[in-house]
Image: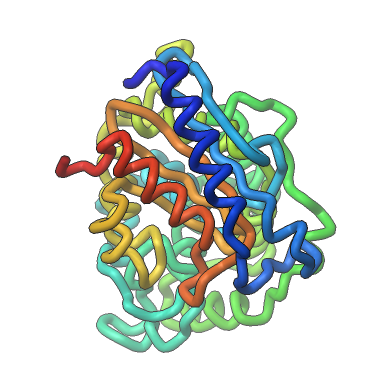
Length: 310
């Protein structure tokens, strides 16, 4: 993995400064107030070998993971049950539909989500995590997130969880339960999924998680294995092909690294064997991806030749 140096830090400062020159006009996310100041809170962090860090802008600002959490939930589910069991109930293909679409469950094998990076697929992955009940299931998820990011105090935003519009996710859950894709109650299976989208962190912590994935599942500082190599391979492949909603193909061409976005404006990006990146930019485009995040990652990728096929 790359060691962070002064030139990389300077690059990040330049990118953030350039991004702040834009007027970010996009849909505001639910956790911020709709004002211009919030739109301009852009930040980026990079974690390289031995946990060395470079960052710029609002990198210490905390935000909910939202759909970024789906990549990590998938990793834990794969560690628990393995790909053979998990992919009997969720597919591996891009959907081409919005991330919260019910229509996609009516395509192909009825009730089976097309991939784990959309809401329905992430609900299935969460249900696969081994636990006696919903409280233990979410506890295991939270402990896993804490271990990866190196912050034992990491927690979820309770007000945000309570304010979450749960009805559409309930519809997805009960449709899949009707087709025996998930089996169990809402409190045990759906609520842990809703809570994990409200877990809050900053760009530095997000980049550290990305660095674990970039390092083949090993902690960048201690070298201890956190995730198996096979799980990392599967997660990164699905991030590359489906992690940026229905903009994944274009993103793969323009940025070229496995990534997962969320409607908080966060993006987790992984450059295998080199570095992990975390960005935040609250203004969203029509696909639900961060306007600033996409632009910053494209510039950074081109400047440092990060694309997987460079």
